[in-house]
Image (cartoon, rainbow, N blue to C red; front, top):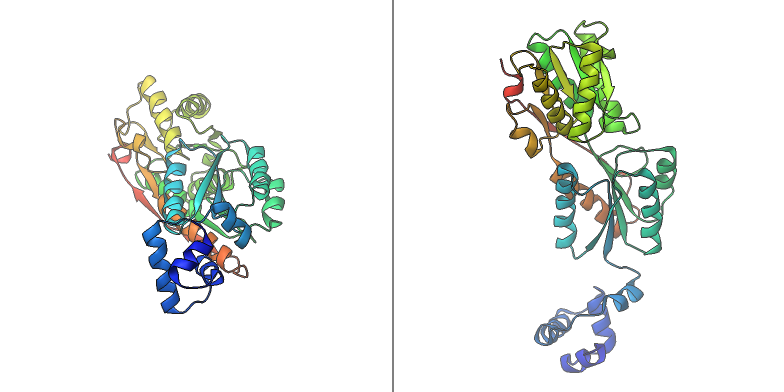
Length: 328
């Protein structure tokens, strides 16, 4: 079955069928006739042929740091729900938290002529900034904010400020912070800055120095909690930049015979399932990850359909979820 055969059966010209397939103008009568034949025959145009005609592949490249992360998988679900509904396919590239691979995949997706790219970002180096600001392929950033690039990001500063103020309001005077590297502007810089501002404004002089940098695993969280307590302990509270870090910290505290929340309060960040099933369950911040993916996909579709669309930024809210780890 080809366009000429479809045209013959529908009683129209081949050019009319071509316009139908490419969403061109047609009278309602011709459109209905062509649609009827296509439905009866089950005709599907070859993707390669359509790409040649329209210069569109209807594929979107999604670059992500690690698919086994609760947050990243939730964002990806939101992206997929919008793009699949609009007839696009996803090409996923898992970088395993390797910043150079993000840059490599940006180039690779350009070579494959995807219609657009979504980068679920962690580190934004100077090389990332240059690559993202000088792209011709429509591109959206999720999870980080970068001037001049359309993005969807979370209110990391205010969320972490609120959770730090929570433990201070419970009477804690000696706090510790377990965070991420500063190259990660959202999780590293913004959350650490919020912690430091909250303790300074509360008059807790010197507390902003009670910080360590951890990896994103439970194991790393436990190891860095050991370092934090060795350097600054005992502490009234430990606030962590992620739930995984908080779970590792809980293991460390228990191993030292420190009861949570009776002797020390503990908070995480991210509302992951693992933080809800610990003993005690860990207070956390809930972000709207799936919504951020859907919003990012819609921003990208706007760019693809309307190339002159101006740069847009969407900042999403959050919800502080208090659990037993801060209740006493």
